[in-house]
Image (cartoon, rainbow, N blue to C red; front, top):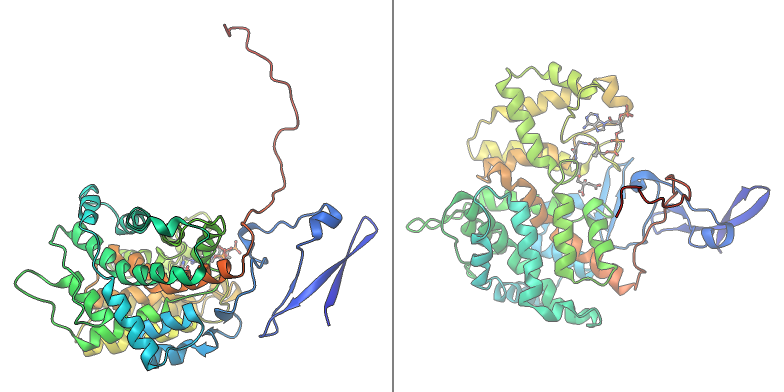
Length: 429
Ligand code: SDX
């Protein structure tokens, strides 16, 4: 039985239905508010506003809970492969053996990219940021697969586009890196697993094929799983709103890559390492940077700290921090920035400024340390986030289109000039 909240404005009463989800989250349905009252709501950054009802991912920011289709992130990170998690997010269930083999095989069949991709790559200057390259290559797929532009194509026909994206994005990511590094592009090797193949394309040299290191493959598999989806974050919301105009999945993913690029979102993992390196070169004075982060007159922020949803801890950060220790010790790497990161965390979590604002390490705080340890260049960190987040973006887009959600078009409160006449200048001809 639907419950209602009552809103009284200028003495008039409005009934707002209360929507309740499967995890007892509640929201006020204001879809008829403007029609009935002329009022809209105003919520900068949508901090209190839900854009949809979704069955893909559940977060509880107070309890540090993250589940994909009901499965705990801790279990998925420990026991699943990245492709299993991708299948789960996109199709709503873990694949059985046959489904998994078919999914894997079909992705392998599409890993090769058109040779004209090299012409697009050659058009970029060598200092092009790989996120800009990746977003362009994702959009370019609309030219190679124009049928993807048909908004009326049945949703199940979009599976080929989904497989092409999962198959080709790793190739684009690797080629964006080799382009930036000025080295030869490696072709995909279907004999290797998804992650092994990615590492091969990233690191193989003409006379020195990449030697698969199970420690590195396992660490990267986990990193990708931990980035796979995160409900209505900035980039997923971007993918949804672009897709809501019936733009193609390729165009929507390209928009998501651009949204993720910002240092407040997926670009934070690159910014964290640059911050830690700066602190190291500046003598490792952690207190100095904690004070800078607290100083409102100082633009410096503690990158990798804080989160819109998590207000106690980011479960992904916990897993990654533990993994960082394991990977570095198994690889026999001593990375001084890991010690600086731990000292920053320890100092911040004892400081009222951070405690009062519930600022804790997020997924980006430690991830760069693992990526660096397995040889991924810093500039590639946001692109690695894109690779991990791809199945989540696809799942969110698919759900939005399957539910036939309306085009996203927020309202506003106008605060500009009131009506005024256009008076022609005397000097006009
Ligand atoms: C991701 O949404 C998702 O799910 C995102 C993500 C995903 O998986 O998709 O989890 C991935 O984007 C993680 C976040 C990565 N970004 C960073 O690490 C950048 C540093 N963090 C922030 O800039 C910030 O914490 C955000 C962007 C993450 C969250 O910003 P909010 O929710 O808009 O909070 P806010 O900026 O309003 O901050 C509230 C207060 C402010 O102080 P007061 O005005 O109350 O005095 O906290 C302060 C802020 O100044 N604050 C920080 C801080 N983050 C917030 N102060 C210093 N250092 C920080 N990092």
